[in-house]
Image (tube, rainbow, N blue to C red; front, side, top):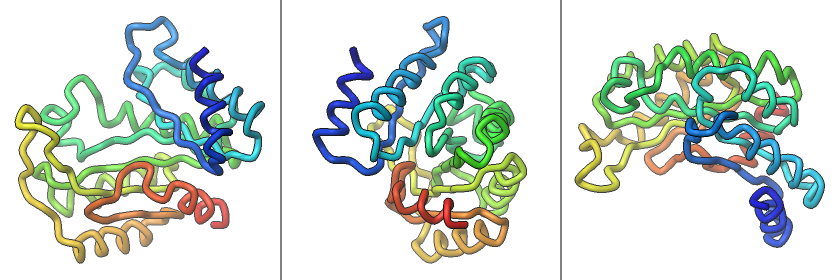
Length: 208
């Protein structure tokens, strides 16, 4: 009943844009796709005026779970690459940068103009500006339209330490460079997170 409860909450709060995400469910045969499908359908039925953005895992790179989600035509498909490729063994063990990029490209190819694709990164893990810009470029090559960039903050002492804090003016430079690469909407700043101003970024991407 979770999809129904989520949709009822969306209607009760009067949301115009809902971001639906989950933990990885690699333990399930469908890798969690059914839950996303159910929530999208329920929101469309109970709160039809609400835009739906899904923030999904990589489904291990398998196309069938992704195709099931995209078939429901979410307004935005978001999958975060989180960091630059060099830092994946440190920050995203078990994940693969190019696999995530393929997921984003496949989502765009499956969804066409009806689905806006989005991804996000964190700064502060030891990456260079050059690495970030190169990563932005690869995302654009894979059809990503919307980009978010924010500062990593260490949740607990058990998590990776912050290597450095990027300055606000550096985020402004990253945003400028990202637009120059062709992104339709970019949000970059110390407090930016994946769902930051999600409704506005969709509107901006859609108008572009």
